[in-house]
Amino acid sequence: MAQKKSKNIGFNVKPPKQTCNDAKCPFHGQLKIRGRVFSGVVIKADMHKSCTVEWPRTFFVPKYERYERRRTRVHAHNPPCINAKKGDRVIIAECRPISKTKKFVVIENKGLDIQYKLKEEGLEEAKFKQKEEKETEEPSAKGE
Ligand SMILES: [Zn+2]
Image (cartoon, helix red, strand yellow):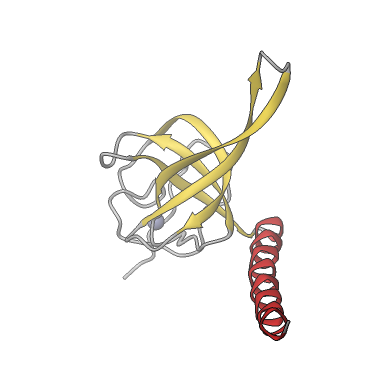
């Protein structure tokens, strides 16, 4: 079978190297992208052909005249040719509603996000430390 050529989706991103037969793929299917485009990190990719993407934003609080950090989370369609994994930095574009909560599609995978990886590792380490502290504290408390 001849390889299907990636369509020009009208947005300046690298087309995926692999091909797929997904009808909801902007490069190899009928899905068209329009509207807003965001860059975020995949925080969950367990669902079939879907992922959750998160990115930070600032929200102004008038009372304190300062900004607070908030984050946006959306579900996005993850075509098999792109196949973004947890921790990947991706570019997502708005498309027609694919399901009740999916209105975005992943259009580029930029690979593992180092900052996200470090953050995850830091959290794991903190958990481990807490455990260790608890284990060392308990016997001394009993001995007293
Ligand atoms: Zn595809």
